[in-house]
Length: 428
Ligand SMILES: Cc1ncc(C[n+]2csc(CCOP(=O)(O)OP(=O)(O)O)c2C)c(N)n1
Image 1 (cartoon, rainbow, N blue to C red):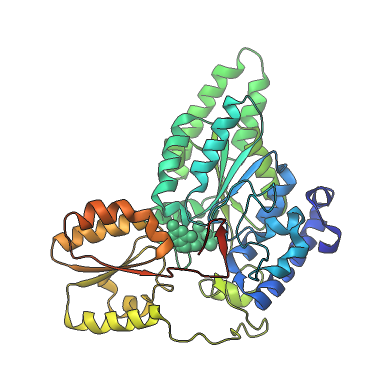
Image 2 (cartoon, helix red, strand yellow; image 1 turned 135 degrees about the vertical axis):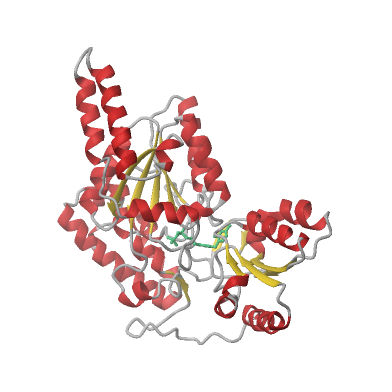
């Protein structure tokens, strides 16, 4: 089926049954490429059906799809005419592993750093309204990225503004490792609920068509529904801040996804569609170890074994040394912004669970938190990749440096990392 699909037009001609076959082909194709070249695997396997459904319902490049982080955009790239370039992933001058506006028109925005998509999509939606245009704008954001402050700032603005846009919450319960935090607690309550809003939207549309009695009646029905919803779904956070919440929907059911996406297209105002997906879907080894296969170097498909064994790197040296220091000093604590594996803190967490803090993809908060701890006599270690430390420059200056607080910052991955180009001016 994948051989037949070379463009979005080809995709749109397929039946649901064809699309199911296509999903299987896409998974095999991605698995082959990533096992040979390395790349982001588990997140891409998780969004195959979602991406097919998005491109079936919406029309890029007129409609804008903003991929948060952008590491999960392989399927989007394959479907938007770049299938043949995928074999150059992570190769010199090869296809970028993230959306690139200068690569294809349907990549409407460059992403790489987490939690930017809702702000950007809201900006695009406001621009559309000012220009009096009619396209749809969609942000696709993971539950991990939703822990970032910028995403929450954007939800706050979007919900209040009432601007027409869709946020797709791709909830796989994982950041790179298991997702944590209060937002995750809220999502876990929503995950277990039946899809609630699916009928309410169509009822509203039908009632709205009845003349005169229509509008007031809708208001009454909505009020009743809202109170029922409060009973069924505790703490309707998204609705309370101005979004219409739809879902949760099975993110591997193309038919259901298309149905829900069509509803979001019809609605005025901000909509959040909660989609449940499985990271690594379809490749058992990645399903069982989604964190290991979040991003990987080349590996053997049969066994999952990485071909070139990783040497001891600076993150490991740091992690081992920190454990040694922490054994002799109970004031030492460690903070990670959702990167415990990459920054070498996995063993520290096992050894000192009470002195380890994974605080979500929230670098600003990580440094602010460390400042408070340091002020009260603790010795916080905060390892963050150099590129992501950019998020916390203000906290580094305002909360730590000016107050001369002993926060220990470890900045790694500085310089050039060749494999993944995330934006045109810098390779990280
Ligand atoms: C500011 C920032 N910090 C850290 C990262 C590293 N990072 C890349 S993907 C990711 C997890 C994203 O989780 P989620 O949004 O749930 O997407 P999923 O991979 O689960 O689909 C992290 C922490 C980043 N890209 N940007």
